[in-house]
Amino acid sequence: MSKKYNKMKKIVQLTDLHVPYHDEKSLAGVYDLLDNIRPHQICLTGDMFDFYELSKFDKNPDRKLTIQDEINEGFKILKTLADLCPEIHFVKGNHEDRLRRFLWQNPSLASLDVLELPNLLRLNELGIKYHDFEYIYNKFRFTHGSIVRAESGASAKAELHKYGSSMASGHTHRLGMYVKTDARGTIGAYEMGCLCQTNPEYIDGIPNWLQGLGVFYFDDDRFYCQQIPIIKHKFIFGNKLYGGE
Image 1 (cartoon, rainbow, N blue to C red):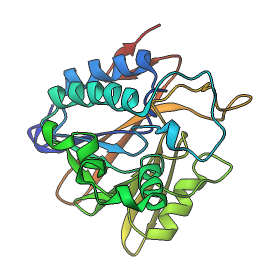
Image 2: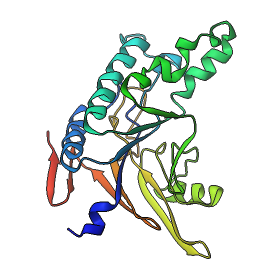
Image 3: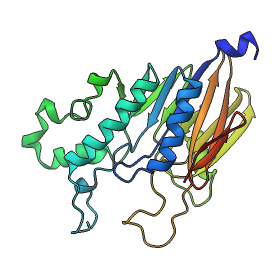
Image 4: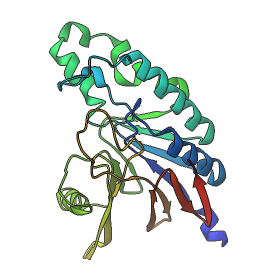
């Protein structure tokens, strides 16, 4: 391994866990990877929490978990991640935004500091930095994303054309990429899959979803992205097989 490579900033992107619908088996492999490669940063690009009870959609009356149960379970995961990486950035997704919509519908509660998302999730306690829309590192945008197209990669293309800068997102629960070279140089946009279960109770049929994560390396004037698909709870990185049944 070259000395230059060792000096590059390493950021791991994790997205769309949808706690309590996260996939514990796949997440165990991710923990193992993080313990081995020890990234400089982890970026969580939204929908870490599902906030099921705050959804406007129909809900399963047999579901026993509460919002507090979701928060408690998610805090355990965040604590594990914080033990594996010194710097974590948390970007809000549309599912976390359910809290804002609920508070705006109940303005008498909106003034309570304890209900502000970073406080509710106890991010400061873990030293996790909160971002309402995006986290930018070296002109690269980490965000949740808002565009969903029918085919993998098409959403990334639309996001790139919308913002005009290199970026990585979640939201679509798919892996895809779109890269182009123009007067700005080579820029790219990446959809980074999900870490939630791919057969949740609220979806009929088979969702067109794929679990995955991303590892980014940043030099002074460039970046490299490795997209890692997770198949049946397993993935390969650096000639090592992670995860298991």
